[in-house]
Image 1: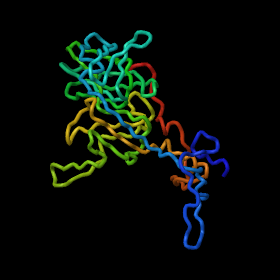
Image 2: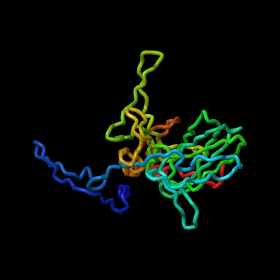
Image 3: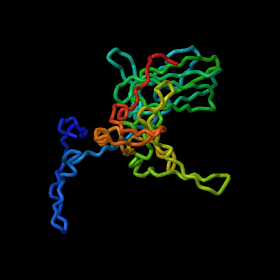
Image 4: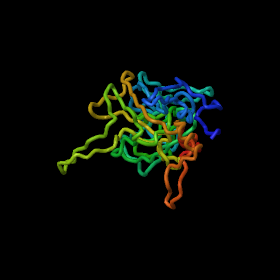
Length: 315
C-alpha cells in the first residue's frame, strides 16, 4: 500500500490546496478527522477537466488552396496567399518552403467546380497537428454534386496538398477550413462534455428532430461533437483526439474573430484516480469469460490520442 501512485510527479504524491483536519465532532464526542481520506494523498486533487476557450477567425473559401485548374496532371496544389482576417495564413519555413498556418487546429473541406473528374481521384493533405507531430489525411473526390468533401482530421499547419489525378475537362478544385476544431486532449465519450457554448448560447443538450412522415420527435446525440477515433490510424481514419464543430442552426453564426467558443470536457486520460485504483487492484468489469478486469493505469494514448498517421507518401 506504500507504493500506490497518487498521480503527481512528486514521489510522495503531494497535492495542492487545504488539508482538512478535525472536521467536526459528532454528538457522541467522536472527532472526525481527514486521516481516512489521506489514502488518496493529502490535500486536494485537481479536476481532470479541460476548458477549450477559443475565438476563431472566419473560414474563407479557398483559404488553404484557392480554386485552381487541375488539368496538368498529378502534383501539388498551390497554397493560397495570406488572406486578411482569415483562419489561414501563408508563411515560409527556414528553408523557404511555404506552408499554411491555421488559427486553431481545424478539419478541412474540398470543393470540386466547373467539371467532374473522370474517375475517383485521391487528394492527400500533409501537415502537422497542434503539437507539431507530422500527419496526413486522404479523401477520394470526383463530382461537383458531392461538394464539399469534408475531411475529419484537425490540422494545425498544412505543408502540402497533393492531387494524384487530372482531367482534360477543365475541372477546378479548392481547399478551405471547416468550422470544426481539433481538441487538445482526448475526448472518448460524448457524455464527458460538461459545457458547450457558442456566441453566448449553450448547445450542450440533445437535439430534437421532427419526423416529417410521422408526428414524432426523435432526440439524437449532439451532432457537433465527435469523439476520438479508436481505429488504427490511417489515411482515412478520424481525428485522434476528437473535434467540436460550430452549430449551424438556431441561429447561423459563423466564426468571425469575435464570437467565442467554450467547450469543457472531462479528460479521462488525465484522471489520476485511474492510477490510484489500478495500484490498489480495483477491478472495473468482467470479460466474456467471467474474468475480472483490473482498472487500467493511465497511458499516453489516453491523453494525447493514438499516434498520428504519416508516411509522407500520397494515397
